[in-house]
Image 1 (cartoon, rainbow, N blue to C red):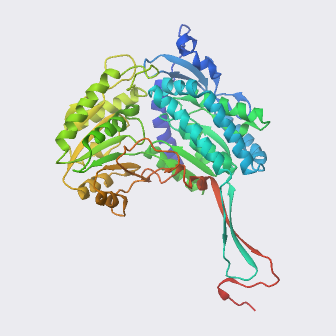
Image 2 (cartoon, helix red, strand yellow; image 1 turned 120 degrees about the horizontal axis):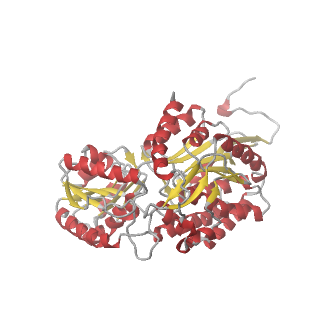
Image 3 (cartoon, rainbow, N blue to C red; image 1 turned 90 degrees about the vertical axis):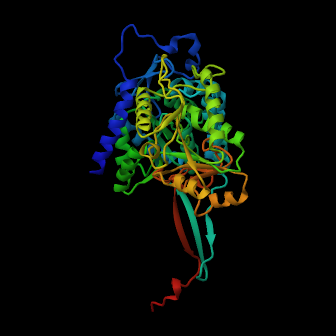
Amino acid sequence: MALLFVARNLRATEKLAFSYTIRNMSSTQKFLIDQPKYSFLKELGLEKRNAGVYNGKWFGNGEVLQTFCPANGELIAEVQAGTVDDYDQCVVESRKAWNVWADIPAPKRGEIVRQIGVALRDKLEPLGKLVSLEMGKILPEGIGEVQEYVDVCDYAVGLSRMMEGKVIPSERPNHALLEMWNPLGTVGVISAFNFPVAVYGWNNALSLVCGNTLIWKGAPSTPLCSVATTKIIADVLEQNNLPGAICSLVSGGADVGIAMAKDVRIPLVSFTGSTKVGREVALTVQSRFGRSLLELGGNNAILVDESADVDLVVRAALFACAGTAGQRCTTTRRLVLHDKVYDAILAKLVKAYEQLLPRTGDPIEAGVMYGPLHNQMAVDQYSAAIKEAVASGGKIEFGGKVMDRPGFFVEPTIISNLKGDTPVVMTETFVPILYVLKCSSLEEAIQINNQVDQGLSSSLFTQNMGQVFKWLGPKGSDCGIVNVNIPTSGAEIGGAFGGEKHTGGGRESGSDSWKQYMRRSTCTINYGKDLPLAQGIKFE
């Protein structure tokens, strides 16, 4: 029954995405890849028609995905997706490759990851431009996303010499008690459209140094990013005479994701996406006693007390709310202001939005600060949320309209005059809508922060050190990311990234996130001649 729900939810979600990315080919249709402006695509090894499956060789027997630029609605290129049978071939080859990869010492695996990082650096600008072109985020963010993958590679290289076990004191004479970590095998990664390179990078770099192989299913609306990234990795593996199936790719739809969630050969499935779909993926994986690493929704809030630096709040909120056109899982969607600073901050934030709007445009162009939503489905969600907010008594302080221009552009929007428990405020909508709420104390603000289902990122702006430790303590924020005087978005790679509650509980990137890609064994070794039992038990 759980699998049936997975199928329905994945198909419902991805069918909508496909409706904006898969269209019938016209004999007269033009491709952006053929235009000189987009010559960087060919630097990445991309063509008009690209195979979307890789397991040491490139192929694909599924439907043709046509990928369109969100800024102008024009066709970029095509990708031949994979089928469930193609996925199965990738699993077979990946498991064979694991027998080679797992035997390589971890520091040597780290050297391969170092080379992947170097190869990504060499393609930093063209791959960053592709992210901007296909996903829709502005160029500094597109390049920054690739840089994040590079940084994680650097981190993983060091980690490859530092993944430690433990030697634990044994209560028995002539016994050693150890804790050992070993790789899981083949890890499945299902990533989302909004970070089409970096999320895979977090999983890829750490999982590789841990000794796993990977099978990646990227978002069906950003398949070129998946193909281009895999080509870079494949070149490194080939240069080192290693099996390409160590890092396999299956571009495809819900059927491939369902197969992966169901597959007992995949001990860990890392899923990034909506809470609704993530819940069902987790249930399916758990039903076969597999592991899931979930990075799901985030209805994030910035809290501001009366002592906060008003100008700092406005600068932070502008990027956190409108950056990536509201399409980050860490986007600030609720701004909770102490009533003493409410009017001043709201007025200044509206002016900041006014200055941002003229810098709307094609995200790969220099100087553009605000780009489009990813597809028409997102535009529809934006319009529906604004309609609901207004019907609930909300006041539009800025924005609220779909822009009359090619592509999927909407105005970044600020809405006031709603309570924190209004249903539309309690719902995460993946668009640039900010709800500005009022409070009279930090305790009230924390209650507003914690009352939503998700628990990803949160931030408090204050100059009061006493407030800081209330916020960080057991009665403070219930999120996985708890910041002070910085926005909710823009996490560094050195810390564990993830959240609580309906965000899924997964942790990726830094700290001890590597442990999720390994299995732990407690090992007792008797190097004496006697056989004493623990707890002093006698069996004689």
